Image (cartoon, rainbow, N blue to C red; front, side):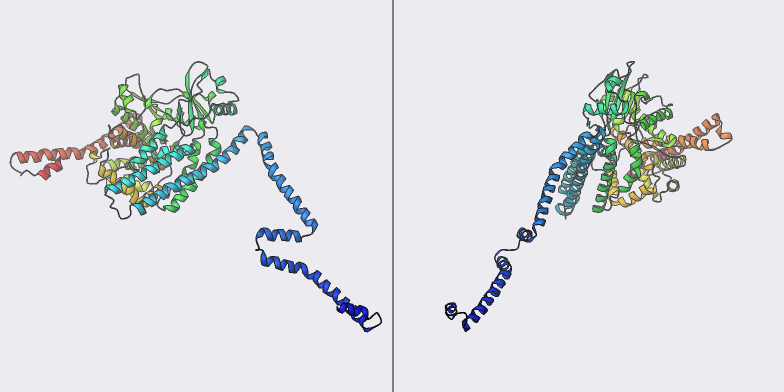
Length: 609
């Protein structure tokens, strides 16, 4: 309406000026509307639509210049191309690798799996024990049947998990599981009975792997290297499998073939075990065994060198040549490499197979006697000690004289004990058998151990009662003595660890040898007195080693022999003197009672018996 009036007034009137002013104001208002509309719209959208990342990203993208949007599209295409082409590139590189590189890449992937599997099993076993002890059995009497049954079930679950993990991971894990079998006096029976299957667990590999290993080491296949080669292994161990074969002249041999990936995975498995032991130590501070693995790492690595094993076998045969009942398979060096060992094929049964030993008409006492004397000779005299004499590595067969022969296998893991420590160990063992407390303390200190009495009990693997007669150190522990040893292992674990740390490092594997021989003797029914047999070997070895270090009169052969015999005679007199004294006292007391000079006393009779 106002606009109509301004138009009717014409250009010369006052209405023209007003129309110009109004037009100018309209243009300014229109400009303001054009400038504010994007902000007003954005404000309205903000009020109605929640700010989520996708909306913000879309708005920011729409507000960017066109060149930026094009670059974003190019980046998307490059990313998509990379995702699609990367697997193709990896596959192309993998196809151009040689067989060893393929194996290393596969081992890298499998190593990650073994690592997480080990952590999983370790945490599961540890958590099960924590829950059982702190929750399920809280406030329950330890002597009650409910407590015993619940703990037994927990032990069985733990043992089953360890066996499952060892079998799945194989290699070094099975080797460590085998080592635990010897601790049947410390570990619950659920563990030792379950872990024993690892001694014979045959985890064989495909024949193609055997061919590949021969091609890498000998540049030929086994059927061309031997006159006959049995594809199927007749035995398998933690680190290798064994095939029967024939040389070109028809000689039967056993060919030990290392698992082809073992060397490549060894370092990774050691690191995994160190991490796992560190984790166990963190959760259970008393179980600090990580340092043991670190100290034995280099020694365990030597077991992967089969040429070193061959040299160990030859040295062992030389050291024990005076024992005619010991058989060491001969090594054939032309068919031997660092991962393949060829030696004589020897028949025999496991030393713990009592039925087969008796079927051969052999005496268990003779077998045990020869076993103890053989390894006592290594520990006390030669100092070159087989560190892995588990039952699968000691075979028994009938010799030409109709008596038992022992076939020693698997010479990969050996330890050397120097002369000084051997002499101290000889004197210590003799002192323990004779229950000479001052001498026990003195010679334990020579080996670097201050907690001497605990060390002596660990060494003998039994309680030591200083009030007991020396000749009554029984080889089979009673239930009370087993309970004492297990209680010592749990209640004084920190002291045990300190004793092991104080010892010379080679003594760790010496302990393993002593404990394994003890375990085998127990399985055979303890037909011989292991403590006395080893003490006699110690006395003889001490005399021989001392003669080697001395000069003059006693180094002459005849006098050396006389000195050794005199030392053995003195030991036998000391060993039996208390027994003879007790028998004489018993005879005199019975005579006094018979003539009425002494009243009969049941307690006195019981003591004399």
